[in-house]
Image (cartoon, rainbow, N blue to C red; front, side, top):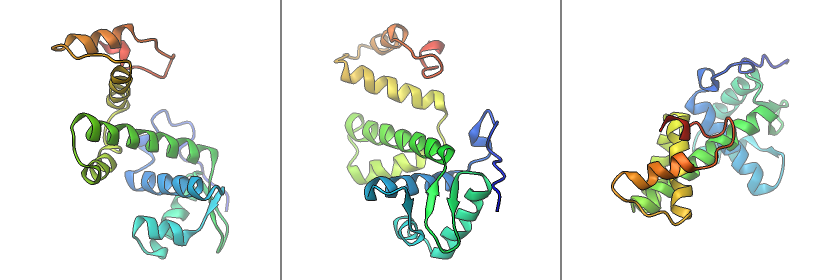
Length: 170
């Protein structure tokens, strides 16, 4: 079966990748990192996501059509380069949000994990960039004064072209 890479060329990946698809990509990536293998078993994905094997197989077929994974009949699942890119992005979003919820808002780890998982799919990239900037601000030893310190940090922060639109809109 030839992949119909429906996501390539899309300026906004979110228009063709659902939050459910993102969960499968993120889980597949995490499992491959944990096992240090490029391919993961359908059974392991099902176990991690607490879904049935047929549900995983159905989603894997869908991800194959979008050019995000490869899967041989009765074989293991492998992320394509585009699938890896999306999975890393989602995992990064998840970690940034989880840290913010735990370390800044003081929520316990379990609640932070669940809420970060929900939030990672719905926040804009601009909002995520602000969370990342805030994390950098905290790590740099910045002290919050009413409204100004963080905004000043954003204005003065060195930006990587195309990587930090958050600083541009201050």
